[in-house]
Length: 255
Length: 222
Image 1 (tube, rainbow over the protein chains, first blue to last red):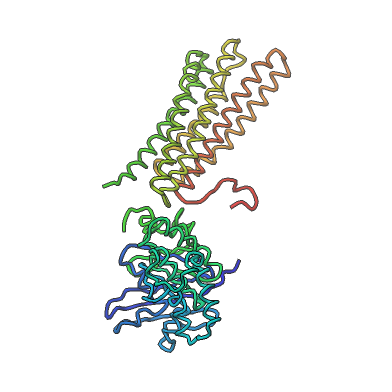
Image 2: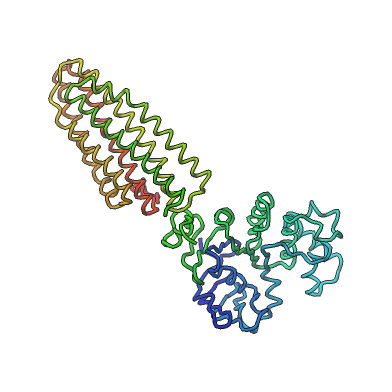
């Protein structure tokens, strides 16, 4: 079967001022699959993830080189001509800690749509419901959509953030350690959700929990010192990696 | 400095080797009991089989515990799955040594049909295969494991030779049939030992290289 790519990273370098954090990264991102980025703290995986939706543009002196091509449009998402605000709607991020806005459940999900200028109540209602269903939260909140998002539990808040990310029909969903602040039950709900979501959207996840990468991802990239050391199918990485460094990290011998 | 888990894996290897050495001894004693007509030794092999069975269970339990508690990955995972599979083969070799000993007990009750020449040769090759496959495991030497695989044909050929020779005895003199059939069994048993040694060697290749090489001759198999 021919792989269908959603994005492709080509010779990506990234600098925080004069410090080079990512070195010559090449990586295919397959469409409607989950790709996991693993590696020891400080290896650059979060920095890499943040390139995908131009989060680094929020700070001066940050600099990208190379390309992240988004398919099928064939646009380079790190090119200065591309509007980062629009990119963030198409490539949304779910963070480590749930970060709902201090608004109602409904308004959290509708937020991105309102930014896009959608005002029609019927359209918003439909999108909000669809997104909440997509994030497996609808049944738990449908009777209290006007309640403040902070009334929800941590796991529910995280699923609300996923619903918020889904509302703008993103092409890629980025997860930055999405369960590190959650208990095991909430974690397994999020993991199930990630696996379901890949039917519709391409997913990239950064995780410190190797078992989580093993459970949810189709492909795994092992990063070290700002470089991709090894990229392969997840089952290959976890049973017989080719690189000695990967082997040592995977088996807990270093990192 | 090694971690608790690394020590557990070393201990696991040690237990597999302990099982391996028990089984190697069982093979050589069972053949010796036949060739030297030593029924006491044959009975001894049969009596010791429960030790082999106990170690088989102990290794399985330890592997299951390590999978549940340590979530092994990559090389560690391959070592544990290899240990589980190798143990099954070793335990079966132990059972075969018991079978050989039982036939030896029966054959020792009757006059010897002929001097045993090919049987000890076969047994020596098969036992060497078991020993070297385990040696390859300890050293992580997949070249040695692959070399072990090449010896299986020698044992198969000897088995065939023994069978034909005994067939000739049986045709010539029907009174030899009972003994000849039992010796044919022994020959077949040894051939099975070589097959189990082959399985072990293939698992060692998997352990070291991460490649499953079983059934390579079958079209379409990876």
